[in-house]
Length: 574
Image 1: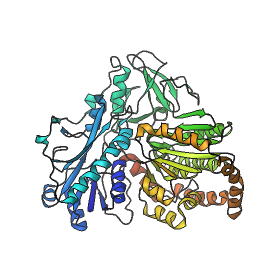
Image 2: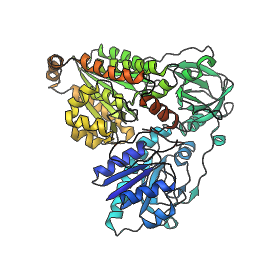
Image 3: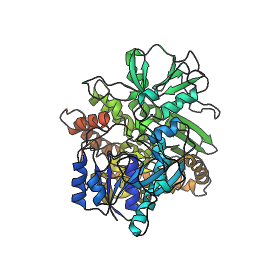
């Protein structure tokens, strides 16, 4: 079918549906807009779709479009659950099961006749992770089922009045309802509130004389103090006491003042700056005991001849500090007596490259852009020049820009079936770095690499496997990926041919170096990036600011129906 995919943002869920529909043989055009009903009408007239599909987040489709065309809407909730904050309520109330429903589009979210619904589990994770994992899996299955039913011409949707499910109309989960009562709320209650708002909109709170949105929440099993007290810092996060324990909060965002530009979400200690009291910096060992319930963003574990270096940074973004600490951890792993190193393996994001929020919040964004890019380049080069063992990149979630290049620098790339690659820099308008001019053509070939960079389109796991970006696709639920990676890595380490593969790495690297040294690729990329960073009129600066402060980059890649969109609230960007 010819499908027009409408959403307020080309976020992770919309990208997943876009790639799954194309993989299913459908022709897909997309409209990313929050510019009112006229934008939708223009897109419908221009593309003449057989089906209009509204992905979450999306404003209600205009009534005349719904009357004249078959219009479906993706609602991230089970049948009968209505309202604008379904995932927030699911996590707030501790639901064990949830789901996605594809309905006849209507004015009220979740109120139309049901075309398809798929249930899923609720993980002990934040809303963004839940959305990109279990919800995206269920949405992809439900959308393909619903589109197939529309194409058949014989299926009739089920009125919600005919379903056994009880209709529940939930209101917008306001900040008044999200508020944490530090004196009374248990760690479990605080985590439920934080996880229901981790990526957006955050939980508004009073802290050190100011109002801040708290983003992310993780339990702490040893530190404790007076409820509400700040106890310690670790890797940019702050630890705060609850009524019966403590939680780690990785990121903060100051409340926007009237007339001021949108505030930037930053690592908590960086956001607080000079307001932060003198707190102990609690270092988490790389090799954390399995029984600990605490937060750390980098961990290392050995299982026989395999070293597993797991990392998980909020939103997948890697600041200068993140890159340097991960490089130090990688060098530690590289000095261990192993034959295989697995990078990643956690659920959710692998990496999305440099940390645009930290750059935007820096005193000198140009200098920080350069430092961050250099640190990421150092990390990618360290992976590329590892010749005494095999390196595997294991993607439980998405990889983009320099983060995708970090994955492609490995000898093998394994990804979960729900993973997305964005191996390009189109959103920021940058030329690109992380040795992409070497690793991307090496994987996809010169012509395909040029197309990927120019079009700036997301690539689903199946297409990544076909085009050489991935070596193996693991068809499993998000919660199962880590265990599958451990099993597969053990099999790889036991492969009789592994020694020969490792022995070939050094001469192969030497041959490639003779053709063109890595330094030449890196210097050419860095020169192009340097010109963009230190030129105040370069589009990169405006695009970075637009992306960071509104979640939207003012860029219209070729070959798509896309209209300019104003800032969109309460969204999770892939």
